[in-house]
Image (cartoon, rainbow over all chains, first blue to last red; front, side):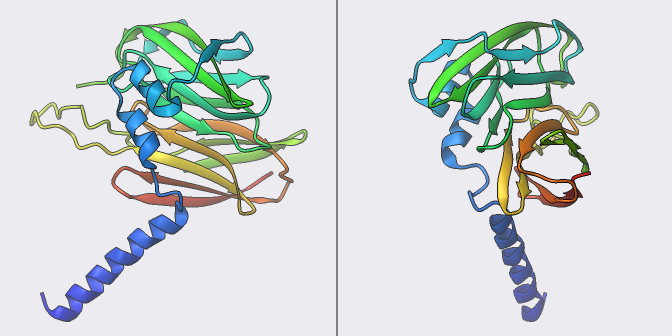
Length: 152
Length: 100
């Protein structure tokens, strides 16, 4: 490969990674959140996300999720809360290989009501944690899974 | 990525369906027995007029072709939204949508 081509290719490579950084100036996947996503237990993921902050069970978080999931590969979840000044909503699937499934950032003006679809490996508890006014609140539900959704 | 954004009273409701395999990296190819490499969306962001109105950080536990629904205030019919995602391999996608 001649020199000109090499230079051109490396410039294109550099530009596309710079482009990604411009789209995601927070450096996609900040280290702190990456550790929580790698955690193999809910407790470790919680420490990664929130240190050892107290979490209070709350009935003001509505976690809509089927009692029995026929297909573990696509389990619809809705988290809705009337707790004030919500900053983040996180979702944990306790028996999945990596329990932290999703973390949602709720800027001011955004409604703390999110729907997503997750994979569940087997019957387990699914927990939602809401950060409201700097405090942490949780709720959980057990989902019975007929056919595990993680394949292989 | 399919995006539907519409006004529901004072709120702009966004529903999207991203096209992505969301491969965990822990599945084995049935024929070769090899691990299928991980490829999943790590972060999905929605911007309205330069303001970030929603961020979703995903693990590989999110279903294939991720579905998301959320709402925010301050949007008006006709306003433009930018939905972008980046996956673990660095691949990105960005689409525009208009609030109907």
